[in-house]
Image (cartoon, rainbow, N blue to C red):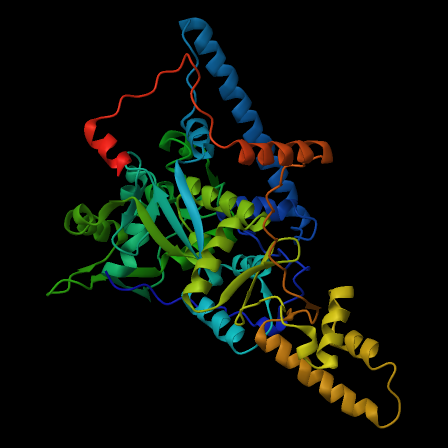
Length: 501
């Protein structure tokens, strides 16, 4: 299959990175809704554009009629249940809604996008400051252009995908049913042209109440294909075809009839791209029949692990899979532990140092930190002054440190003292004895805890005296001989000879 177009990369600029204690904003997290849901949400939103009064009245009347029809169908269903004595059938749409909210058995992990990660590594290596791993993980998760999504499914319930880079779903039937719509641009060249104006007098047109799509007059030759195509693309998983037909209304407004005539002039042709001899089809139905007989049997594959881009992960056609990724993204943004582990491993592979500081938080820097263990008498007094100042108060910046150490210097020696302080501080930072964070604060590396000493038994003066007396008496008496009741071990002749000699 042709390679999908390259998505734009949002490279992080660490110069704009906030302080490690600050958290990036969470604007625009999964604020996308498609189709009729978006339109309904826009109508309810206070900032949405209000329709005219006439259109609002028609919408109210239409919604009231739809409510009355639904109530009548429910009552009719109860009456049928009472007559038959059997359980009332549950609608297909309700069954599918319940199945769609069940979380799938799938693991979702978020990985840093390679170009964005390489940009961050280059920026960290160009400076000597330390960056919070928590803040970096949140920044990678902030925009979908900065991360990839790895999906891992179980063998008994894999993920189905169209080719190597096509659409994916947990439902194979759904993917096969909509495969032409998802992959037609990879197999066909689509040309859109304008035909001659439609002739004839039409008094009404059919319109879908859920989407507002004009399907044309019911006696037009293209009405049934348009109706079936719209149902398969948008509502086949929510309701039956008979239920969807009840959502079709007949309108007789001249403006809508003229608009349908203009839309019907559009002619779409499909030309094959992969065949040696290209074939052209005049309608989507003909192209779809060709697609199902020639391409679809070998196109659907099952995978247990797949990695997709962050932008694509927000546009998956499978709602169940989309919801699982959204929930995982929400949890990971709140506590990005998995992303931090992935970043820490990749930073170490890139030659950077990951260390703990400030209540055990993880930081990354190009410098390996280490406590200052040299003899203070072997370094200059200015270096000792810097270390003592940071030990007394951690988290101060360069300006506060200069004000504290240069306050007692007056006259022409101020500038010389500031230059010496900057030189000493730069040496301490490059050697890893002082940590400079991206927010400008300074701190000493965290010292390793000393090993616990083994506790010696406490000996009282009385017990120690007794032990000394016992040892002295044992030395004077020497080894004791066996008593009368004890038998001496019998020795062999060789042993007696050795003793005699």
